[in-house]
Length: 386
Image (tube, rainbow, N blue to C red; front, side, top):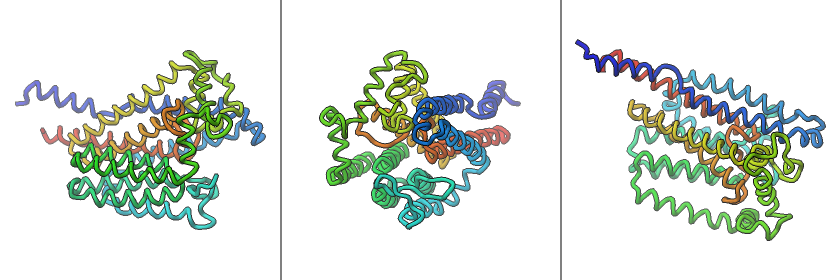
């Protein structure tokens, strides 16, 4: 005879597992909608002047949004076991697509950096894709192997890929990948002494990479004192800080930004958070930060739930996605407020940028799939009477 408490518990489990985490999806939708509105505000005048078409960026962004939704829907239909079983193929692809940009005619160089793959109809920033692919392999590898015994192999692969990305002159993607990797290692139980030893080594290695690259060193110097070169290396940061100052608590009003009128470069991308602060104010900016914080903790809860359900690969993948999204948002916001050196990194789901937006929708699709498989796992357990 089934006890009443067991019956209630099982029904609650079934209730929890029905459907998707709609709150998380709503948060993603709010950020996407905010991005569309702010890109519209930032690019209308600029696109008219530069492209003779006010809607140039808006149309492209809508195309990427539609494509992102389509890809996310497809991703939700693919079992996570596919990525787990073919993780070695993803590792190989991570290196192949990173190297293919050096082939003349395929790789595209912009501002001295060769990190884009020109496919004709779309230009892909390969580091965005390769860092997910290598982390899929790592999530799978540490699922099947003890992390303290297999860490060196994981570290070697990360080191090799980071070396290629650095040759592409993409220090930001390298830093994001390293932060995500070590954060995951901490979560899955890597020996603390070993973790911090290698993390310290990574910091030491990064110092000469900054010192012996004049443009990186210049960014560090201008970040520490932008007023030393207000019309040169410190210009972007000063323009960003002015946007925050003008916006105040409630903002100048949607579409009323002064800095976007060719004063703040990349206001629709690398400095869109400053534009949000100027037009919508401090309160709305804080709401954006809170949303990212809420998304982070919601995904962490999903990762913990997956581990409880013995879906270890799903758990590792969820942690990875949470770190990718959160660290990118954190770096963008810190750059905009002057707490980190200027770095070209968009705000997830908000900034203009096709590859990054598509990757965010791939993350969403993967997270929805993780939720689906958690639901299936719980439902099967209930049916078996556990």
